[in-house]
Amino acid sequence: MRLIRAKDYQDMSRKAANIISAQVILKPESVLGLATGSTPIGIYHQLIDWYKKGDVDFSRVVSINLDEYCGLSDSNPQSYSRFMREHFFDYINISPANIFLPDGTQTDSALECARYDRVIVEHGGIDLQLLGIGRNAHIGFNEPDVCFSRGTHQVTLTESTIAANTRFFESVEQVPRQAYSVGMQAIMQAKKILLIASGADKAEALQKSFFGPVTPQVPASILQLHQDVTVIADMDALALCPAE
Image (cartoon, rainbow, N blue to C red; front, side, top):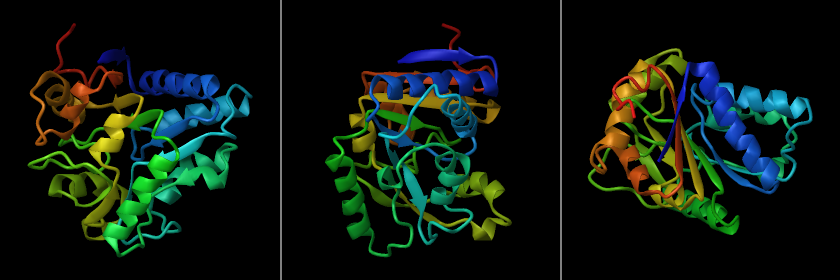
């Protein structure tokens, strides 16, 4: 693991955006595994700024997003599809044909999960996977469990995840209880992994994930077994991690 310490959220976002832009510049047809949530927003805005300045070109990039809420269409304001358009895709030159997310309206979970796994395989896997981390150390929507999930799967969200995501909805009752998520196999097969964390509420998850035992009860801990992981976190998120 390579750990990069950032001064604050803005510094973390810029450092992470540097790594993603370098990936795209060096390999214009890169397959990016992208994440949603509040943490990556600063990264996306920085990449948009560099795109507008002509520093990075996304015309050949493929985006394969980690997850989507079950029951929400891509036009729903709270869907991750809508999130990605509003915070990133609508402002860069990525081809709509190269944008992939799970279909939250698909009620046949086996069919949808198999389809999404095929999308990943057909594009040769993920070159760089961007990850946030939940307060319970989930990555994507891979929640704490008795074993590590393999392929794309339908997840029943934990109460802590539902509570954390309530801030994006008008009430806790509106938060979907299930989601489709890329599994650990595709994540671990990514050539490079970039995990970002910001804020004191992520400190315990970060410490357990990278300085504790590898266990499915701490989903992100599996990243200790990957050969090319970069973690960028601000000082608050690193408060419980060793200084060196």
